[in-house]
Length: 296
Image (cartoon, rainbow, N blue to C red):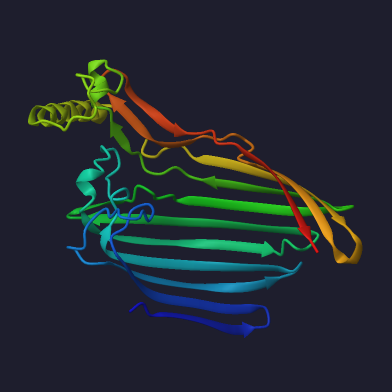
């Protein structure tokens, strides 16, 4: 049973009070659902979440609607193989697939928007939050904890069927996470010393890898790595031209660029004895696109 309750109280013509509470359950999960793949078993039961929020909705001049919402969540029997890793430690994904813990999140979100169907449409949202994991006697920020998230977008109808749009995304960095490159420490560029990556691990491989892991951990502890990874910024752009044809028919052409600023996101640091610790980045991923739309 997943009961949920949401209320809306119209205090004045321009002010409404909002609240919500819910209980949710789901089986152990990973990043996404893959047929035939289950990371973490059902021995610890299903995951349980208790979610609550309360806020105020305001109708402001200029047809702008704004909300200010505080939220709090608690999670139990949590299966989070990626999030349940203490900052500054090796990922150890396989070792945490069956690990269960608890989690909590709380924060504040401010959101304001004006319909994008208007001549000038826009929205802005800012979230200040914290996500914590509790495993055994340890409490630490989730590996996906982002304290600050800002989204802004605007669309302007400049006339004659032309419309310009842009969206900016900013979020602060996640806690420092480290991955150990164990095989690279022999100077074999990430490959096994014998060059055979397909054979099963032997007891000698396991013992040797654990020794290397501890040696790298000692080096990492002596380094002054930042507590969090760098922040990320992305700008998306959009240009649209619309033609009005006979009998209400329309034809439009759009040109878009996702991540027009070619920003890179730092995912973690990779450490080895030979190369030290280096940031591991994703991108830049720049996705241009051209689209057409017809209505009749």
